[in-house]
Length: 578
Image (tube, rainbow, N blue to C red; front, side, top):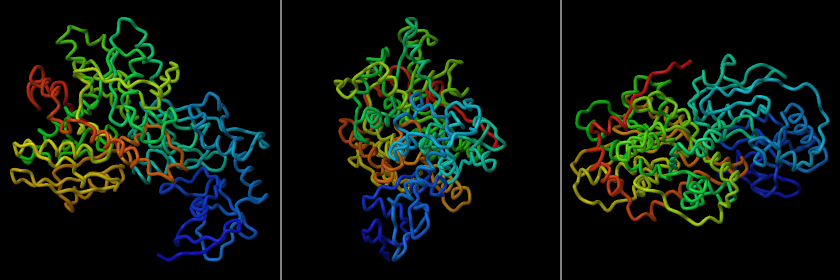
């Protein structure tokens, strides 16, 4: 690799050709502030906060490629004054309600302003006035806080290929909005929340359900049950200052019990259930040859993406509901049939790493006899706020277990939180079912990792060959589907997670600032914690879960049977692209 030599603040350094000055400086410990820059996603040099002095000029370092002999100064008065002016101009047209903002103390604009020692705004004048768009099931837009960095647009259009939002207008009238200034709910938005994760300020955030959940918890006539997705346990600790990737499963269960939930269940139970249902469905499709490839339906953002963009592939989606919807439906039906509890008095709450689950729980298809499977979805961040509001010392909680029968799970269920996890969990069980023996090959490394698209060809014990594709991020998913439709590829099984890295970096997870994301692969760190929990489990195959066996024997009958289809399966609908 060809290297270039340059000087930054008097220090000569050597970096690979093509490295930007911003990257070069940070690699050598020189901190240059930035707002619009997001590694591998966005570097348009919009905000001008990262300017450096090169000769007589001030140039944005995020788009300036290092060259031999370049002499860069990052800390002159001219540079500091320019940076302050840029940030003050942004603040002059910003809704400055920092103490009550949802991003207070986790706002990159706030951090940069503090670092630059900005105490007064020199440029007070006209401000952008625009209403809050809160019609979406999942995402709220506050245009008056937008700093026009473009990070959300690049994420939505370039990474996800959804194109729900873009720049509109010119000059002072420039804004970020869906086409024709429609509301987000009327666009092709798939509710993944990755725009929230990209936003450096509070211009985008999840639609909260905290007050509704508090009201349910305070209602003596309601039985309030809660379930937590696999990825929550490796994210919730970050809301309380614990290192990224800390496993906090037991503390999470204890905190939920302290909040007042009547039953604390684990979505991992239903992930094991999903493997039995979806695995059986895959084997049946392999036998008939119909509706192949089967495509996973655990991710509601991916499902809505298919409904908008590939309606001809809707029948390829698994008919299984997502694990959280499965568990919601099963809990209400089970407690009604076994204990006589009126399902209308059961309030089902899901803690999800995903903003799209807020949309999913409100779908007409996600109910049984007009009773919703899940009543409210809270993100990891919302759960963190509730715990803080209740004054619970999360870090020092003693570990507690989930409640049964819907609290026991296997390692196969835990890995649902990482890209490739559903495929691996399914293969662990299918290998055993088709061979009739307990296979020792537990870790299926070929489907793991953060590569955007992974392919695997596996031979089952009965001699059948199954080809699988695993994609995360909808830009990668689009490539897989297009290859299948064109005939370039022919798969039997396709796993897709809408978010880059899978649920561990879902749109409802703790927000990690751009600088930390540049230094650390958050996807890999959280995924490692997921796999560590899998390794620590005594049981690591879904069909080995004794509570799953029992629920089929006593209640559901058999996978893909009549009762299962009534409670655990659904259908999907075509949606307009516009």
